[in-house]
Each structure stands twice: as C-alpha cells, then as structure tokens.
Image 1 (cartoon, one colour):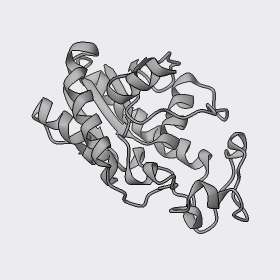
Image 2 (tube, helix red, strand yellow):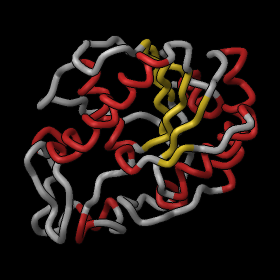
Image 3 (cartoon, one colour):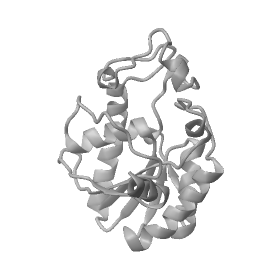
Image 4 (cartoon, helix red, strand yellow):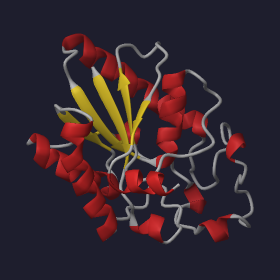
Amino acid sequence: MKLYFMRHGESEANSLDILASRKDFALTERGKKDAEEISREFPDRVGPLTGIISSPLKRARQTAEPFCRLTRREAEIIEAVTEQELGDFAGMTYAEIENAPGYETDRTKRWEWVPRGGGESYAMIAERIKPFFKDMEERNLKDSSQALLVVTHAVTLRLIRAFLEKTLPHYPREIAHNGEIWEVDYDKAESRYDLKIHLLGEAARRNSRA
C-alpha cells in the first residue's frame, strides 16, 4: 500500500514562533490556502488517494479538509499521530524556551528527556506509533491497493521517519517543512523503507528559492 505522511500547513503557532505541542492552534489563512493548493496538485504530481488519516489537532484536521473533499471521504482521526506533549513548555515561544530551566535545547538528546508537567519523550512517541504501523500492516494484508494520506506534525514526523528507516533511537535532526510530504510503499512494520519526498505548493516554491 501507499502511505503518504504530510506535515500540516502553516499554523498560527508557526507564524508566531510558538511551540504549539498539543495546544489547538488553527491554520493561518496562508496555511489554509497552501493546503488547498497542495490538494489540487496532489493527484497529478503524486497520485490518487483512497483515504485520509489525521491527527486530532485542529491544524492537522484543517489541512486534511481539502483532501477529504477531493476523495469525498471523511478523515479518520487517529490519536497515535498527534504531536509531542511538551508539558509545561507547551505554548512558549522559541525565544522563551532557550532560557527555560529544564528544557533540552540539544535536539540530539531528546530520546529519554521527558518535559516536566506531563510531557512526552521521543522514546514515548516511538512507542505510541508502533501500534499505528501494525494497524497499517493489517490493512495492507486486507487491501494492498490503498493509498492513504496521514496528516501529522513536525516532531512526530521525526520519529515516524526514524521508525521507517530503522535508525531508532537515532532520529533526524531536521524537521519537515509545513506541507512537506513523504511517500513510502508500505507492507510490514519490521521492514526498512526509503522515503520519497514531495514538495508541492509553498514548500516547492521555498525549495526553488533555496
């Protein structure tokens, strides 16, 4: 089956340099327009879709909406692909976070770091996505012709990529751009995968200027 993983469009938190975590920020108008543009480009430049999966957070659901109209299907909401819980640090700006006591500023050292106030380590995220991939494996056995778009978040995508490339507990330092899409031909959770990256809409224009 085809799985496509997409980071949501630009959110109000992104525009204000805020670590949103699970706070329910909406998309900006720019983010909404970008999601619409990407959904229009997707069929011809990437391929057909048979279903949509979304994180429960508003910014992901809003990104999924134009794809739902495209496929005439409702988004399936799955908690496992929601964003990292940052506990006490959720909602702080990047400027504030740099000097916040207890915050791990080194991106390479967050595997076992648990943010205070009920936060979630990267190891915990990796554990919660494992059942999701087992579920995808079972769906593939039933129907390998499926092509599903999964709308999720920056940190969760970091762990999804490491899971698929079988590098855990090591994970990418960089994060996906808003609207960036990763494609994988998926069958079993235990397999290692190479990801194909698609840049459409604003992400494509940003890449062309780089």
